[in-house]
Image (cartoon, rainbow, N blue to C red; front, side, top):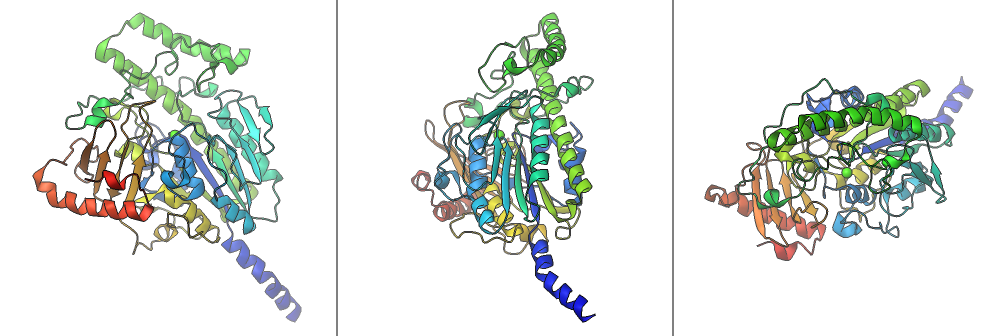
Length: 503
Ligand code: CA
């Protein structure tokens, strides 16, 4: 009896350690928005596997990003810092790898770390025992991957499937004596939305409802008026909608030139029918724009269908291997996206659809199934939250805060506003730079540079951001209070560029 007891006591630290050291799988897609996820109430498509994570854990309804574009969002994930502090304000730059990233802290505390799939930061950050990432945007078909040794290999197949396969291979080959943290970075659903062969035509029998803001006239909203990201004018027939695309083209993120002959035959057969439909209809004006919208929805949602299926495959793997019970699973995207709202695709704006990003998390035994979180949290909070979950010290230089307490029902003391700053202008989509705050009720933003102006939205009464209330005298006090909060935030996050622009 005594021997058994002593053996149990000897085991105790390990058991406690295992409990406090869950594994984490952080799945982050690209441009996949809440409007396309059924857990968020979407009627456009069913996403049973993302929904499963939400159902078995928590769903966050107001997770905003601090700069709504791809690379900057991932740089914020890695550093727990805003773009102006980690230096990655724009896409297509080189992330400064001399700065600390949170996976280094995990390594120090005994975790194995890996990032597989899309990262797109122009450099290979420290902090990962294993990397196998897409060069730049990678390709939807037969993509190259770059590993930790900077070697490039080409993997035949559809990129979302390949990323899942490589993730499972790493999970199989990992050191099973250590807890793990893995980022599964998906290319889907980034432009230009090439579906998997098995999903071609998945939505051909659906006519998608035109969003009620599709024909927005942008009254009192200068930046919304001046953008270049509309389905009508900006979306390309060949490259985006595959009406006779150049199958030999090496340029861009589509890489139509990488198909095997068999893949190309199947892909082209489908899109030749699309081209025939386009040619035969001879559409112009609104009819043409709405045809483009339907094609966009079909390609985007077919691309998302593979994404959800692959998430399901990973969840299934966790079930089969018994890892589910001690593995936290997160699904999120680098930002939200427009699915025809305001007539747009793309992201960038502080408006709801692109400001918010989906975030669901399952943490067995800690987060109650069916938890719903309405507080405003930000992607700057992701790194601290992950470190908190993995029982690893959060460096004091990180700017975000762990929202793990919110996920377990402890809501008191959480900050009520979050900061935003977007920079990339004028290319590629002519969205004026702007900064602002989102509270649980309002969004206040200052646009600057070529044109200088303010916007205020009442999220409760105007969730679609159609009514700029900044010049409405009834809101003078609200604006005054929000500006004070904004200045507080700017000082807190040390955004020296923004401070003199508050007038
Ligand atoms: Ca993105």
